[in-house]
Length: 214
Image (tube, rainbow, N blue to C red; front, side):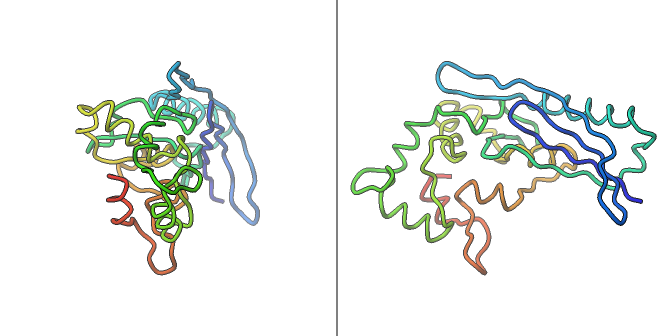
């Protein structure tokens, strides 16, 4: 019998579940932990990585208290989470500032400046829109998209921005904290609008990074 723990990090809390894996997948126990969503007057929406981590640890301990399963019996853990957040970290994986939630709307000026002027569709200059659609099959047309959050920090917090080593999403930060590895799953990569989704060309697209100044 194998045992795994899954963590589902939502907007205001994490649901932590213990499963057994045999001939079937069976839910053994679950816990729920909460954390804050900090809403600001300027349209900002942020969270705290330490609150994520504390909730993860507390709910994990709660599972073991509910069952006779020991930590040594756990074969693996998995994460799913809210997406399109921005967690900026240094070379050691330490968060440099509070993560910006997918709800953050501060980067209106950054989005407009990068989209340019001229003939547009959905506010995006046609040549940029077409290039993005061809390469990623999507385009960053919402102020909530993480690329604009990244540009906002670059413009408004330059000293902090100079220390940035990696740009992660929520579950990628948690994976890094657990493993000391910088990775990004394809679903999170797609949401950056910098990842080439064309068959045979999957990977970060340097041309798009240059176009957006990333």
